[in-house]
Image (cartoon, rainbow over all chains, first blue to last red; front, side, top):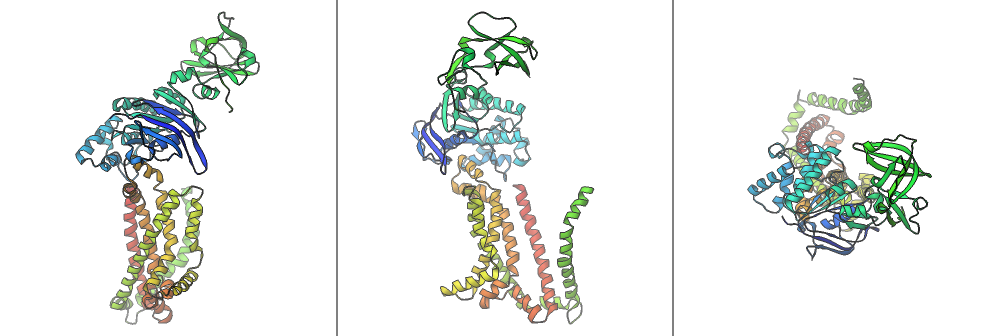
Length: 338
Length: 259
């Protein structure tokens, strides 16, 4: 399977009088994973439906490998979609669900059997145990795997996933996320992964596209976006961020706001030297995050969050401490109206 | 235990009602039919079963009911599909109301107005008018069962089939219809049973074609003073329809359960 590159040009789409996508231009590179992330209602599912051909854009073009696919119906796009609610066919067995796209394409029954077996093994379901089961008898995680198997069995050039893991518990989610990565590598499909979960996006995406209110506000590699958010919204939505009041750090104002990641907020009992902005604060809550601890610090009625290794967090609530923030870790970003 | 007792109490009014107005009279009618014939026990049954003209009436009524059930189901299914899957969610209840509205007008009134309309286009009482009347009468029921049928076969499944490579027609045949079919069939069975003994519409619109099981029973019991024959025929029909329905619903349930 070779992936296709997908490009959206100035796409506008909506339902009835409601505009959902308000001019989206975005390129999904061939054979790579792009995570589309944004709060609910930002238009990310509609974007995915436009790529699948299930929603006709009102304006703009959809290109597959440079060719105009805007008017091509879904069945001729060679995409695989894993819907948020899976949309498995309830009247068919696991085998028949996965065989469906192959039979539609006129594969011989021998070839269908071979490929269904391949797809089931790829998603980690033992064919002899699961092929004959009805989909309603499966657990949520197993249904998820069937939906993924059905979407990849015909080796589509573009794989679209709409929050496929959102209703699974954390452990299964972790495992499926790793398997999706592996499947994508093995198949070479271009993958568009829609999620509202920043951690999924960071883990899976070669690229992330951050959406808000029908527009893509930032696109790039996850680390690049994390380190250089374009505005306050991206800074606080993609990863955690402290907004630093300008009177505290002497930066920002004039439509700009200074932000810093919690892991870049250092806390010390003694006043540190060096190129730091330093101020005194009171320790508030300490929240245990496994190997790390998130400490809330109060200064002048403002709360800051600091993330640090557990062994460094030897403070208790009420302690007076020094907070030090390296100037080069502070980013000045546009203020967003929230 | 207390839970099942409470549940039993909740069902009690309904059970009492059915006992008083359905099971007791039915038992009485059966008992009456067994001994009421002039020639001793079961003679009414023997008379009913040995009259070829009764077979003709029952067969014709069954065929009519089957056709009416088939046509109304086929007419209602696309409308129900539209109402459940295509229309915007806000419009769906309104569309259902519009489709079911004829149900709120009494069937007598509807049949008479249909008769008047048909006269305008020079269609008189007869087979066509009767079939139109039957379809008109049962269409709302078919819409309601169709609504249930296609609510279980949401548009998302069609979309999934499309992305998997199916044309709209292939999606309809391989995904939508297999899921909706058991429910559509259940609706058709209900309509068949109601249409089988209908005598208002056949009487008003059927003319000479309108002599159905319903009419036959009406004449036997109310005009002909042959209560024994009427009871025997009713008992036989009830047994046949209960058995037929049981088989049909068992089959429908099996198909639906696989889905």
